[in-house]
Each structure stands twice: as structure tokens, then as C-alpha cells.
Length: 262
Image (cartoon, rainbow, N blue to C red):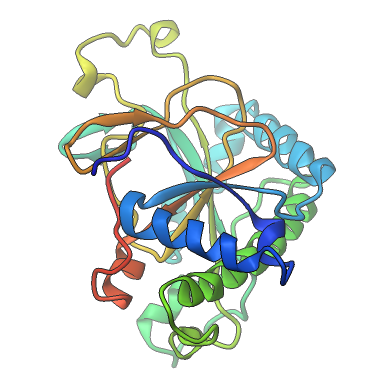
């Protein structure tokens, strides 16, 4: 049966032996039937969440020339700033600007395989302009990285596997990536047209295992696709993250966990 709403799961219940079985049952349903869920009570401090939102806004308020100092094309790591309208999904322009970051890893040496460039250092905004941006986002990535590893072990248990079933697929110092995105008001930009010409980001499926979306404002926009191809609203809910199942997890579980477009 196609879903018409996104389930909300309380992560604190997974940390209590008395409520964990019921949590795993709900998680199993979300994994097999929906491919998306909200999680609440994650343990991420609300003060940190508000700092993340504030620092993200301040970054996008910087002059264009300051943002372009850390443009993605400056580095081989695919980390850094992407200007408005620079990306395309399904042959249509995505009207968004963004900065891509990752957890810290040692700088690759010239003798390392080329793919180790993906572990290259972040490009950070000028600290004289945004002195708190880097420490806030480094702390946030550590927190969210830990939650993602905890969640993957819960996924394993929810589908009847040992909690450590997926550990062999991860590096000891696993890289976690983060994307900060601004979707501007297209009417203010003078961009109008049909749905395909005015997208923030087109329908897509993430390639990784799981994504954790913090909706930083009360503006609606996120939708997810169900089995019938219908688009279901996924409105912002305070104190939650939206978890999207990615193509990586679907492949790793041989299709048991399903992913759908959003």
C-alpha cells in the first residue's frame, strides 16, 4: 500500500531496552514501506541546532566574492561553495546555492590513490568574516556522524541482522558529508515558469546510505514520492530530522530497504 504520510520515530525509545522492540518494529515498517521517516529526541542540543541555522544564514549573506573564495572548483575534493544555478537535475537548472563540507581527515599525499582526494580538507569561509562558522559546523558534523552510525546499527536490527552487521563496510575513520543549502525566492529573482523550470532541486535519490535533513525554516517545499508516484508533503517539524534512505543502503540490503525520490 502506498504511504500518504511520513512516520515520526522517537530515537530515545531505541536507547531504552523497554521501548526498543516497538521502535524497531516501527523502523522496519518505515524502511520497507516508506523509505523516509522523521526522527525526534536525537540528543543533538537545540542550542547547537540554532547555531547551525544562524551560521548557515550568515554564510549566504556574505558578498558573492567572499563565497567564491571557497568555490568547489578550487579543490579536487568536491568540497566548497557552489553558486546559484550551478547544478542541474534531470536536465533542469537547480535554483539553489550551497556549500559542501565533510568530517576532517588527513591531507592525502601525492602517492595516494586519486580517490583519496575526496578526503582532502574542507574549504572554510574566512574566519575574519565568520569566526564561529567552522567550530559550529565541526561540532555538528561530529554529532550527526555519531547519530548516523547509531542509526545504521538500528537499521540492521530492524531487518533481523546483528547490530554490527554493516560495520565491515565502513572505514575506521568514516567520512561524513554535510551540505548547507539555500533555496532563494524565485519570484524575487525574476524566475518564473512551470514546475520543471523553477525547481530548487529536481526529483532525485541520494546515493549514500542515509541522509539526515534539517529543515531550517518553516517554509514548505520538501516532498517525497510514494509507490504510486504521488508526491507526499514532508513539512518542517520542530525538533526533528528527516531521514532519507539512499541507494547505497538499498544496494547493501539487496533491496530490503527501499529508497524513493524526493
